[in-house]
Image (cartoon, rainbow, N blue to C red; front, side, top):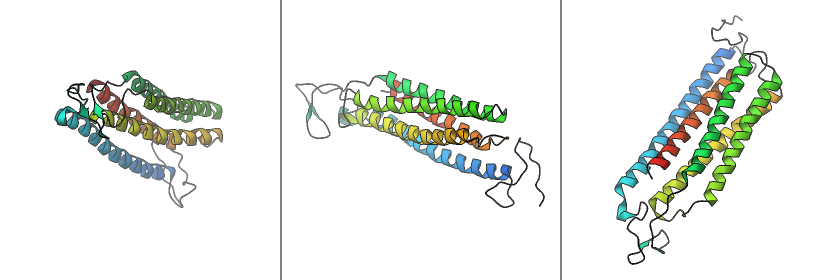
Length: 226
């Protein structure tokens, strides 16, 4: 069996899990699958942003943030209770803090790829992956805490429900990237990224950058268009 040498630094041996398929061929298939996933997630991101901007502009019955609600002229929340004041804005620094931690985690995941490509050693890759995981766990904890620190509940107007939906979307993405980081750390700890086998880390770097970018968009919309 003849295997064509690849020009992207991939080992030129067959993939251990696919008969006759090289590492490069397997990586290209995985990369296509990743980009298809990112494309689908990007559609959801666009829909989220569109919903926020559209409902904010529409402002049905003045209930984006209840700007017209007063004690003399109360509005009605989602449970039929009177809403007698404008809904307060959420503190944007919690969201900015979560974003900062995700950016740090994405940068560290990218660093694991560079370390593996340079064959820096199992310990370097494992420790970098562990730091990325720690940053993501801190981001998850901060995002969960933000839910408890909101000055409103989900039923207090469209702004409140949209804001919590954005936070839920961010938390879901953090959980997914966190699971990926657990896998990276475990495989690095076991030495699976040695001898030039860094291809999966390239995909994880792309995925981490996408997650950080998508969360940045949500944080920007929540903070600027409130």
